[in-house]
Length: 111
Length: 111
DNA sequence: CCCTTCCATATCCGAATGGTTATATAACCG
DNA sequence: CGGTTATATAACCATTCGGATATGGAAGGG
Image 1 (tube, rainbow over the protein chains, first blue to last red):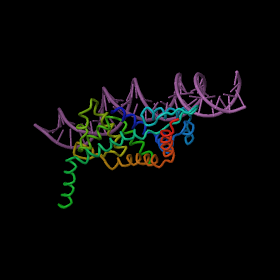
Image 2: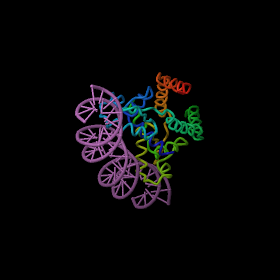
Image 3: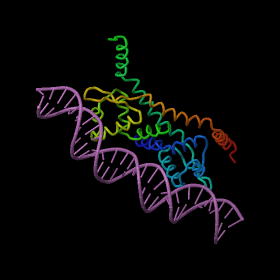
């Protein structure tokens, strides 16, 4: 859905959240582990995690007192698919062909 | 740069702006052409275009009184490269291997 | 020249965002 | 049970965002 893409892109727009995703791509991690690299408070991290979770990009585990987060790689597909869609439209465009031919013509017909 | 990714993802987080990009993927278009499908005012469209431009995703043409916008496809690469990066980290993760083996073990060793 | 079309810019507004501090809950450690 | 650790939640605050209205300027058409 459109809304799902909204949430994913919005989630990815923050550098802290992207860093968290990169960290989780390497391995699962607890909230306090995820917090370490950043100069912000724990509640701020929890908020970021909630947003990533809401976008479906991560999942919450259950391990005694810690709740390890897990990257949901599959969720990235929706986003990359959107990019492929854009490129496909671009490639299929007749105007794009016009553009190319015009450019070529201009090259030859140096007035 | 990190900031460049911030701008791109933030720009892509809005459905109106994504729709504009899809439209521009088919062919260049003027502001008024771009406005047509949307129930919002022209200044709102201009704002969206400024954001897309600031993110490097589109460019501004100069044609008499109209200023046609143009999709900058190359700019998408930065974003898709980031996704590839995430996937690479994921694929290379030793923990991921552990995860797989553990799952396999659990399958076999059904106690 | 006037009028219309196309677009940008300024200002304002309500809602969302990213951060903080303070506090609650739940599990583990003695 | 008391204290500590790990995390969530609430309340607050400044900033940003997406939109509207109002206005200005530049090009074209009569």
